[in-house]
Each structure stands twice: as structure tokens, then as C-alpha cells.
Length: 68
Picture 1 (cartoon, rainbow, N blue to C red):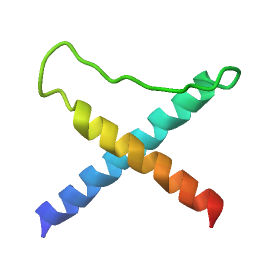
Picture 2: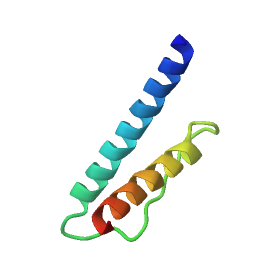
Picture 3: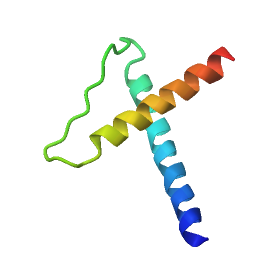
Picture 4: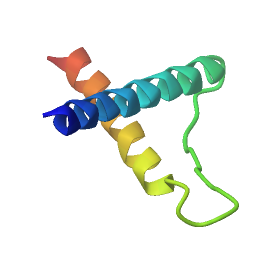
């Protein structure tokens, strides 16, 4: 039971981090809206794909909430 709770907690932390990152990106681009975002790192396996997916999910959630 404890592992499932920890996994759910981990997922929530990742979602909150993605929402915070999206808010920071939008705040930084108030005057000049961004057309693209590039995620990069110095070494492999640092979570670029995971970060990109979570950021996309956060964007999608906000679009759905706005339109429905």
C-alpha cells in the first residue's frame, strides 16, 4: 500500500513541477509570446523526454479547461 501512495505522490509532484514550469514560461513571455521551446541537457538520461511530455500535458490540461 505504501508504494502506491508514494507513486501517486511522485506523480503529483511531477505534475505540479510541470505546471510551475509552464507558468514561468508564460510569465517570461508576456510581451513576446514564445513560438518554440527547446529542452536540452549536457548528458543523456536526464529526463528531457519526461519533462517534455509533462509540459505538454500541462498545456493540454489548460487548453481543455479553457475551452470546456
